[in-house]
Image 1: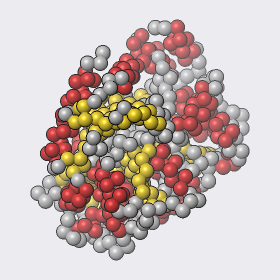
Image 2 (image 1 turned 180 degrees about the vertical axis):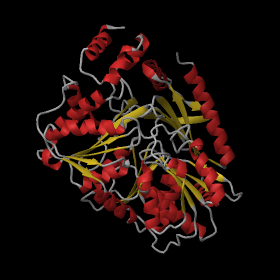
Image 3 (image 1 turned 135 degrees about the vertical axis):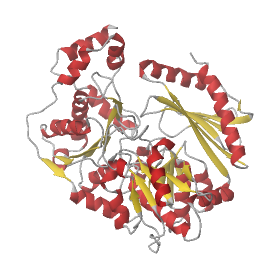
Image 4 (image 1 turned 180 degrees about the horizontal axis):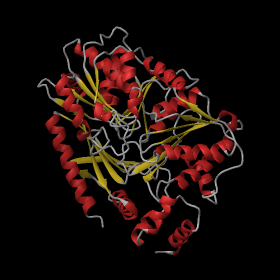
Length: 561
């Protein structure tokens, strides 16, 4: 073990740490100590996220306290009235979520800052809404979204209810790093801790209902199975849909129970087909039209819809986003000053729809905070926010929430399903019609899991390898543009230009027909993500090409030592 790691370990051993953490620390061998103390957990695309346990590279109460003090110091410098405005804190169903929320509350109140703490678990989009509704200086959400049970996380929000963009997150990181004694973070004041629940719940649900487009939707013609996957969606979703007029909502009772162990699931991720096992059983029993699953903090929504063979088909985030965007474009008033936002790894079908339907599309980096930032930039202009979505199952219809919102997404999806069922169409039929009109856009994602410090180093070596390969052709198709977002550099047919988006660890290669593949280390999980997007003559043509691309790229990856 190197000296820096030894110093950290000794500091923790000689400090007043939580007794459970101390027991874990004393039981660790050298490899475990290196993994837990060999790095410091840092902000990614969604704040802090890591395995729960002892150490500087883990999520624990001392890391939460240190981070909270840093966030406090950032807020009081940015907002002169931060103490009076206060902070909202919410938490999800995970291990230690409530304990972390109480630890954060204590740091803030003992430094004189008012805290609004939800009385029990609440979804991430409601936290974003609450910051704006209560006019707070910021927000904290304790969640690790769809990660496995051993993870937890800590997301911070600005006074507009938006996750911090990198420049602001860097300022918070600087303040966190300036906290010299992470075991002595409490102040000597006693500010108000206000418990919130029904008032904010009711206002949030009232606002979600405003996103409905067609007031004449039949609503009683569809059956919907819903599962929150043991997460925060259990708080409001069934109530929302019932109050909005949908009488045939069938919750998966086994998964309506908050459970940080996710005991009925292999993965609490609506991107995974396994997450729908219980919903599928209930769907067949009640003959449901659609199955809906939201992730543990209820910012993302996944769906499965019936096809003509009466089988349930799991739709991707790109496919669901295309269905919702197309419906809005056909049914909601707009013009060229109406803006749609998505990310650089979202399907190109959005551009095709926006071009034909007289909407303006703007692409951002990956991370919904960038879409939230764009919503803020539109305020006070003659431009209007129309829709925002990304491939990873998140969208927002109206920006009273500045983050992904599965409640808005679910309510709109039910409207879409009901509207088209009146025409004798399933959502799968609708998707096929969109493909026939705009082209067969298909996407694939290859996830490469590489855990621990060695995994992080391997991911960097893979990214460095691709950055220097000078690829000209993949799967028989010519590459015309290479974009390196880390260097803010784009090269098209040998000509270099500047990328104006913020710097990020993303590499993107664009084919001559507009398809692409991109590599990006996940900011929320220990994995490298490879995104592939193509438009083909038909499904088989597109799928075949994606598999060829995956095969060639994985050959390169597997040769990186």
